[in-house]
Length: 306
Image 1 (cartoon, rainbow, N blue to C red):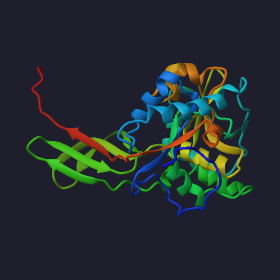
Image 2: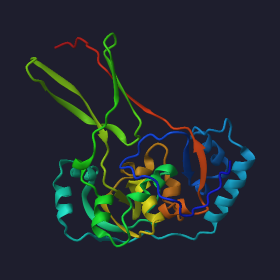
Image 3: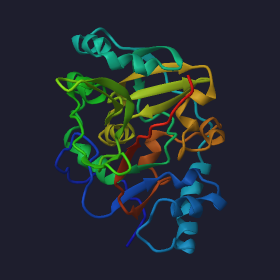
Image 4: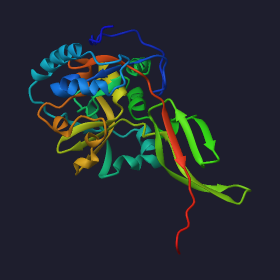
């Protein structure tokens, strides 16, 4: 098995609208050239590789080549941002109740065009199989209408999840398993059970915000959502893409502080990783085992003094 990256075009596969579970191991592309030598093998070990143990000599050689590519890069400047022109699709998008979620922690969220390849990548890896599955969905160069709907789809068009559900009445534990890593807990819900004299409380499950979004802090424009689409767009030759753009005033509000992301010192350093780097010798492919995702909710009753 060869793990080296040769970022050449490949035959498009059947398009999928979301990142669903596929059969067999996943090809994971990692921006390994941005890791320090002591961290490279350790990070690959966390990816649940199909190899029983990371081949240290192999990793060292791959890291050496990828790191050499990164080291020859000079300091990078952030890409420019231009507001989007009015469009009926954007009017509908702004009218959705979920659009306000883009501005959490920010003064506002606006719709803008930005250079996809030049966006700072906080996320070190992508599922390359999913990037290739998106090939049929990527609009043609010049298809501005298609690009709007690909990058900024309406939330109302998202298909609800159909999880495998179970309930343990002995422990009052509700559980469900999903294959799609885009599914998450979207917040609390409550209501009444019609005709039963009962109320229900719980959590809504569904995809996160579907729109590609960028968060800016201290002038650094970081891709927040839509990594697989961003790489697929850059791979197809797109440059300027429409996104939801917001500026925040605290590091804690950026994607750089989330688990599994590059260290903020790398993200805010002179040579931050970029989306275009997933198509460069600074990245390598490894095979990893796929995962499913379990959501569980447990209910208990406790007396509370009045």
